[in-house]
Length: 191
Image (tube, rainbow, N blue to C red; front, side, top):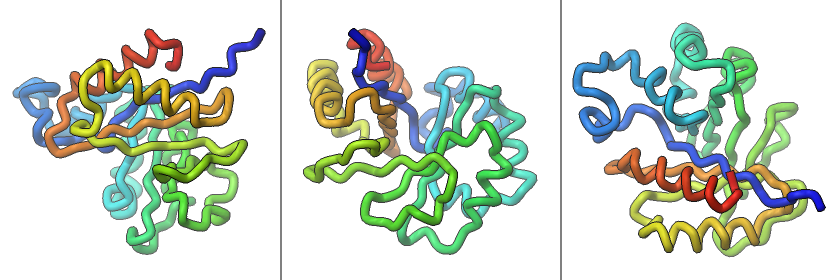
């Protein structure tokens, strides 16, 4: 019998949180090495639209140089994000582009051939073939029991075999919370 459980990819929103300096990032780590350090621990990141939309070509090329070929960038697309050249950024990211994450209320046809994940809205059912994404704050995760309940609940709501993106965010996010959630998902056979 095939295993049709969803696969959870648990990543952070951004890689350069000030609270990580000294707790996740060593105190003496140069600022321009943070992405590489992050990429050695976590296999992907959601890049906020405010960051990728204003990045120039040289900056995006540095991002790609700073990570290995298996690392994935997911680009957040938000309604109030302004006018940005998604296709140009996607081309620069090349194979390191995991996809775009759009709000479920937005029109997504303009993303073309770029893999698209729909940001799930609480209470709205997901249709077949949708690749869901969730943005969760660390303060909403609770303890490990609550996290297990959350993962099992989400696994029951998404289409069989779906790739599910869980992006963890928060100004005071502790990287240990992200790592613990990733390990829990692995133990539950969901990662």
